[in-house]
Image (cartoon, rainbow, N blue to C red; front, top):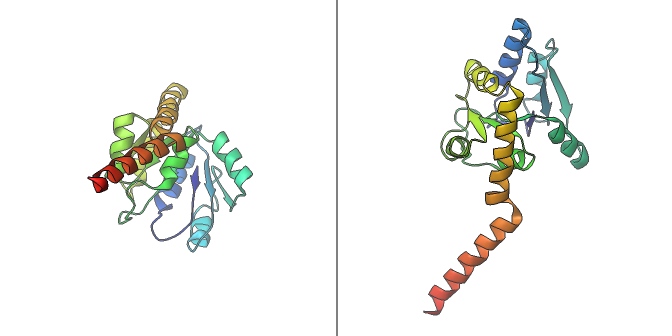
Amino acid sequence: MFAGTFGRTYDLGPVLACAAQFAGEGTPGFHFLICGEGERGEEWRRSAQRLPNVSFTGWLAQDEMRAALGAADIGLAAYAPDAPQGLPNKVIEYLAAGLAVVSSLPGETAQLLSAEGCGRTYTAGSASSLAEALLGLRSPDARRVVAENARRVFAARFRAEAVYSLLAEYLERTAGMLES
């Protein structure tokens, strides 16, 4: 599943090309759920018009989004090659939902996914690289392990209680430096 705004920094072209490849090859087990709207929506809907393994939902209400995340296995962070994001909220939202993350972002996001075993990175703009990353998560056992890692990473590093305690420690240290 992809959830987001269909704007300049996202690139669903490779996602749709990968979906077309899977549909053409008869690769079972993959359905691409695309949630959101934006300036490139019409273009991407046209590209997916005849693909039986792609669905567009438009904007979803909070409860609908929660249900979609709960039904998904993999969260797609499909960014354009020149996207400036480092570690975007989208990745953290997917981790919170216990989804394996497949992302095209290099740097901080790629390092997190690799080091923590909570996802895969593909080359931005490359449908074949995306297909390889997705096929690496094809088995239920592989997805289960990665999903467990995603939940663990979210709880340890991004859950509000973890973030707030680290922030409080930082503020106390900073205040102590100012008093000295």
